[in-house]
Image (cartoon, rainbow, N blue to C red; front, side, top):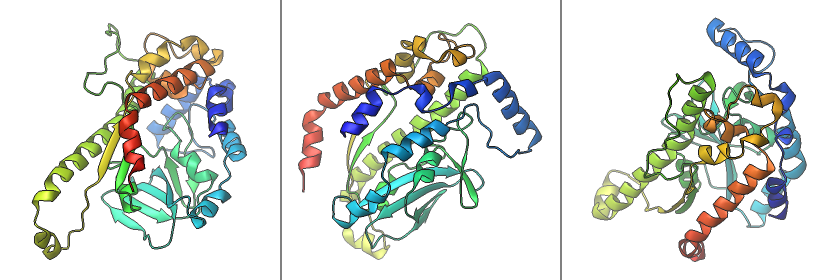
Length: 308
């Protein structure tokens, strides 16, 4: 945890991507031409080169310790989800104790594997912004895309209590930025699409699970057995940011690497900014926001984790 804290409190964008690769005008043109022509080139198409992220993760994460911690009982399972571009499926790569089998569901599957850097890089490959990652014969992108039921992986792996950490602030309010008097830019449109992919599915999934928890006690066990339906109540606790992260990011616009500030404007690109602003001020603000929001639910969090 000390290592994780140090990294996030001292992070810089150049540790995640090469800011000099951010000739967004040229990169966006390449992406657009590739989309229109349907042709691919020898390199993965993206706006930014995130190879520094791979180097950082390879230094700080000891993937061989996952199985060790499973063997000694500190972990039951670890899973990383990515979206397969060719099949459109949400693929959960998991490493766990014996007795868990691969699964298939609507647009989602679970594959037992030994987790490596490539799985993590695939899961964090934000579409268009970062390049897709090849694992065996498939290319994968960010796991939030087409992930229709984010909690299903944890349930398949045996979870009966779920602590879900969301990224959508003030869910009960409409997430509005300043009024717009001009047509949206390409970056705004991309940001809007990505924001929808990252936020909506978790909220809908948690709502569905809550409704299922309300229904299950009213279904006679004999009916469940007769229909071969295996369901369990899932205890849920969700924590979400108390502020909109895109609006928070705009307060730290001046930290954006100069090569990118030519293309990303402070007034109109809050969502995109929140996705690529890996700088000390903004990340420390995120850290503090997360801490404050957790403390607001401290009693409920303690209660969840103290149960047998």
